[in-house]
Amino acid sequence: MFRMNEFEIFLKKYVCCGTLSEWQKECWERLMVQNKLYPDSGVELTPYIAKHYDRLMNAISLGIYSRFIHKAIADMGIKRDDNILDLGCGTGKNASLMLRYLGDEGRITGVDLSQIMQGQFEKRFASEHRVTFQRQRIDVPFDLGKKFNIVFISFVIHGFPHEVRRVIIENVIRHLKTSGSFIILDFAEFDLAKMPALYRWVFKKIECKYAFDFIERDWKAILSGYGFGSFTEHHYIKKYARLLKGVKEK
Ligand SMILES: C[S@@+](CC[C@H](N)C(=O)[O-])C[C@H]1O[C@@H](n2cnc3c(N)ncnc32)[C@H](O)[C@@H]1O
Image (cartoon, rainbow, N blue to C red; front, side, top):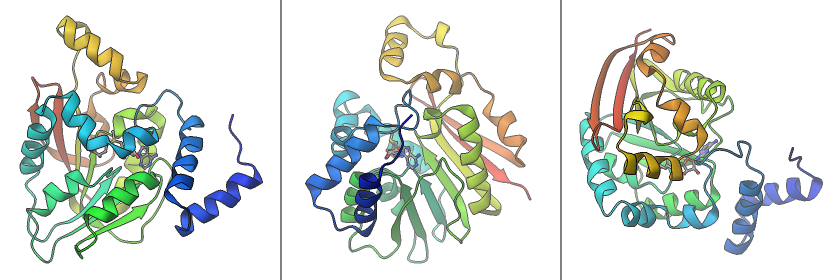
């Protein structure tokens, strides 16, 4: 198992201070990815994928991903004054789409562990006072010291062991106001064995083992156990992706 030595602690201190060059940041991310906490996870991205994430998603999906994400964000039902926490926010592409629905009083806080994602996110919103970024792991307990009325997580939670997903849900509850919504955009629940052969082959090729477990779980039942209710859902891409919204009832 990976243990931080003094050099890495020293390096981390400078990464967090933001004093490293682009090359040094990339070395740091390579070091972290090689020593992933969850070696079988696909959501801790390599520096190359992190750097080109939006373009790769569009190219691989032949533009389908972009159309789907526009539709899904529209279906979130964002109100002008919403205060949104986006966990594992990536490049800020989703935040830029959410921003279209917010008025001057609305806010978005993006959270991600990746320094490369942070760079892209902060560049995208350099002159946007309604959007801020926080560098933070979401798979450990954390407290930003404020509450939001929407917590959004898109294509992140499937990539962890189930006990870690529970830590993420506890983080969601800690940051969500009563009557606020937890919105998961991710794979839907489906039976891999019943998927058309070509789709199944692609899914197995590109997805990590935790995703296979994610699609088999009853997410409304899991979230009900944490006090969420009044569920609504929208399906996309032949019902293989889903936007699931649950309301924090107390
Ligand atoms: C598959 S990408 C999805 C990005 C974005 N949510 C979207 O839908 O385009 C996964 C994102 O989660 C971030 N991530 C992975 N593990 C994380 C963790 N433990 N804490 C915070 N962010 C994490 C990655 O850096 C990456 O930006």
